[in-house]
Length: 611
Image (cartoon, helix red, strand yellow):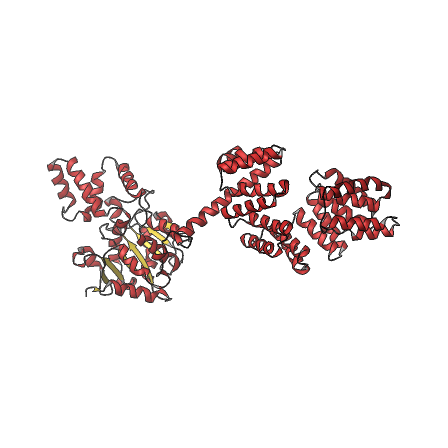
């Protein structure tokens, strides 16, 4: 019995029925006809062009002899594609590969291929077998999905194909364009043994949807013909003109198979697009952020941009530390890091620094890292908080999901604006962007402790920060402060102070905090040693820490009281404060040791720690 003919709509309905089914799986067999709408000529078109070339290359007698020898039918040149290709490039086979590469290099997947990519990636129908050499299927997958396909463009890879895989799989039985594709009768007349073994379970389990394939290669067509009918699933042979099927095709198809008249590959894919989750896919091709194409492109762009920014930050840190960054790396980084930030870091003149920031922003107005660094400069150096906030916001407009920028703005809202609800919102956004970022976990822990007074939650985030970075001196030191001031667990606190100093022995803040801790416990000699180390480690910018150190000196060393008072009042007159710092243990210890000016200590502590 002959195959039955069904409509395109009937095939679409079968596909729709199989969409949620655990039974039927479809595999697509694509020939050159599927690529026409993507600007790749069909085999028939190429055969005609090359035949005309041959007619000018040979004498009339030679042409007729060749036609006779190769059994060329001038009315059905497509059936003799391989023989025509071989003759056209007989004297320079490499030129044939180059001609094909040139034809295919500029081809972009048509809409039909984009729909096919969605089907391959999001359904159980994940296999394509093709005689084509082009990259349209894989290019479409890269454009609209994040799934990496298995691409087998050479028979040496055949053993790596598994019929039960859910990964999009592309089987190129005539090889990939870059791997000496098969175009000669000698290698297209029979199917390689490796493919025979690999295709056996696919054709046994998958219903084959054939599109744009004429069956003129011999290899794949003969393989399908020789398969016992019971060893394969039905074939749905899609074609424009059912009455013009080749004799090979007619001899292949049996009563279990179907002939499906279609207008073209793209048109069939449009019809498939209307099933289930694909129904809005075509309408999704619009120029806004919700488009799948734009979202995928944007995600990839942001991913690479983030990698470049991270390299840039590492380079910036090296420059700040006086190290020479890798010259090869510098060459690929955005200009501002090399030309502006390096110069900014090399001068101590704040006016010159600001001039360089403004020059950089004039040249690179959308550079998020430069906008962010200028915001920090305005906040920390100029104390111009309105302008600083403006540049924090500009940095976030340029890169809305950067955890550093979100976290820095959260700190600004907390410390400067005292807008705690907004600050918490941005701390959370930073953690959404980077859930394991130790800086953001640690800063949020400080916020929960100091502002929200939610100590259990704060401790949870201190621990998360340490899980993320077990050797981070800041996170160890901050947790030590928490254990000392809030939990009053002095043994554990001391353990973490020591860990912080093991991690960074010259960290002035941790040295000073440990000194204050020891002095508060009455371990005066040890505390004095760490106090001395802190004075040697501190730099001029750490004015609040200077204030704390002189307070410890006044509280525990009456013989140095005059010098300590002079420095304390000088710093207070300059507006220096250490807001929220806890001197209670030191005042209590001073009182226990008979300090004669405890009232003065209490008054100074209030001035130092209050706004």
